[in-house]
Image (cartoon, rainbow over the protein chains, first blue to last red):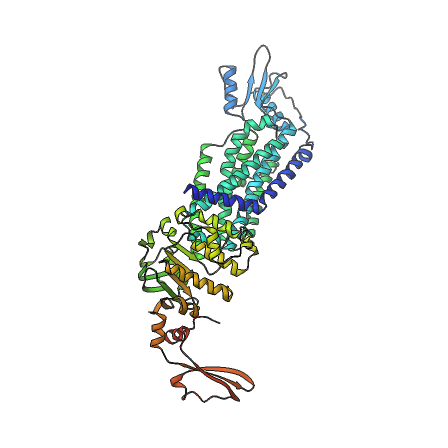
Length: 330
Length: 283
């Protein structure tokens, strides 16, 4: 069984290398890295202009304020709730503390939010930003997360279909129907091949475009997201390629998926545009979680992983059923 | 050995495409399954191979009940498809090496010996299959289906796409396999191949088996000769075939002149047409 699986795996790796897909991967890696390093991260986005209307007659504090017993307790709270803002008031000096958002605009807003919430009683608060990153780094992280997501959702999806349509064209699926091999191996092998390729891609993207020390901090979290995202897209790609009789039909479905489900996510997550409906797109949650871990912010909830796990199992079973159907049909 | 009892199958129940088929193929026998396109040959073969498990009746091959087939069943069989399905970007040797991974080592035959057997030129063995002619691909496919020393062979149009020399070689190999005790289920609409190779043949039409017998017995029991007349009709060359006994009754037809008259014995195709009212091929 293991010998058979290794044989299928080796063959799928060879097929990927023969089809020169690694060149596309390598090419896109270099192209995107060039773009991130020399174009995107070099651009300058001005911060918010802050206008202060000092109406001292107004008073009161925000209902969100919670008292903690010690300074250490405050840091612990900030570690747990990375969106929260801490305020330390002491004789030696008062300070506003928050986790870096990666965006100077948001950092400013956080500062003034805390200042407002505490009743603006002192104008000389010091600022302590935890896990600080520069604007250029923030841009690199942002674009790296976009590229990784695009690479996995769009390119992987297309690559698996191209690989499978080629096998279909050669009639190999018919041969598998009469071989003493478990059909599940055919799916598992492709998942492993593309997972390995994507892990390599993400590692190289991280090393080429992010600060190495920073990348070390997030690499495990990012890989966890890749472990979810890559098999999902491979299974979806495999399913679509089994569903459609030829590559033309598949390309139509692919275009619909990219235009309708993937592109809007970039639009609504990375720009100021806002639309509540985007939360109903599965791709929104996949991208948003990937982005969050790239920025070393809150990690996805157990519920998210549960839904992803269930989806993976369902897609896997659908794939097996569709392989059997394809074998009967052929 | 293959034992089929009351086999019925429907892709969309209750519209059966196979109707209560019964036949047995003995160990070491070459059994021809003859029928025109759409007669149920391929569906029967898919049922026998365990690809269509939702059938009614009983199918036993090499002591395996086909409804419950596992990997072990596929270790014992070899299947040659009508089209040569191979990885076109691999060489013949690499294809065979790859497929050999799925069988127990003690069953796998030597790749070079197999390629010698099917007559694939040594110069091509390490070239990618995409550079092969159809005949060379078919030979490689035949080598693939013999790779695991199968007890039962399923051959679908085994000489299709081969040149005459290749066809002779493949027929020799099939006979050779039979002499090793291999049971062979041969699906074809080429009556010459069936006549030459098969110990017994079954005629299948519209999902029903019409006749099962040896080619010799079938020809003997329908031994009337055929009279073939070539003639010119308004300058065009035409041909009619008549049963010898009806020769006098049907001799009246318009013609400028008769070119030739010759007699021949009944072929398997003639008998097929006589028994089923259908032609084997559309050619």
